[in-house]
Image (cartoon, rainbow, N blue to C red; front, side, top):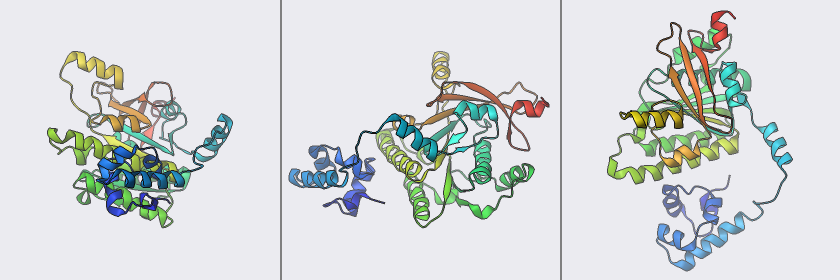
Length: 326
């Protein structure tokens, strides 16, 4: 795999400076202005131009015109879909959770974010026959007993050795979260076939950032999203992230949040994250229901906006009709 250090004049320290600004690929460097590169790296203009020349040489031939049919056939062949357990939810997403994509799940406590992640791990192994990685950022978020129960009740012979975990005690800052992606990437390069990466939750390591540091946090999140997009696209992986939500006390703002996101509680995410995630799914537990009924709204994505109901019970994620015996 090519890296920033393949560019002439870019050593590890200069590459790190670029990565801190969310610039993680040779392609991104190649379209920069010399003056912009000069400021970031603290070099003179001629040096910046030489670096850009090398980046452009490395990306030569990257852009070409191809037909929509070629794109369609390529994606049809490449992208796989991980079933969610609910056919209604799968239909809303266009077939399930797709590889080569970033998926954001957001909702209040008990909305079903982690439960859906567990089900996707089981189904990734059942249907795709690929391993899963789980990056835990909050203590005890990963419940392996629950995953084993789901697998057992659904008749899936699940091997815990096929789930690779980075536990929360290893992730105490956004920097270590980024290192976790790099570690997973290294294992992929060593030959590990990972079809699903779960990050539960993405924004927890960022929540301790003071308000005056919000611009730095936004830049850091842009860097994170850029790396995750590369992993998803290059290795045909589904990246699923859970997000905490923010309370909105004003009634007018609650209405606007419902219009924008499907629920009254928007995800805690920077604009870079909001635009970088391909599918935003709002989850809500229907409190008035006598059964474990949940609601999912596709707040943003390539499919039409829609809302569906599904169940989370002892067996896992299921259609409403199955519970009711329809």
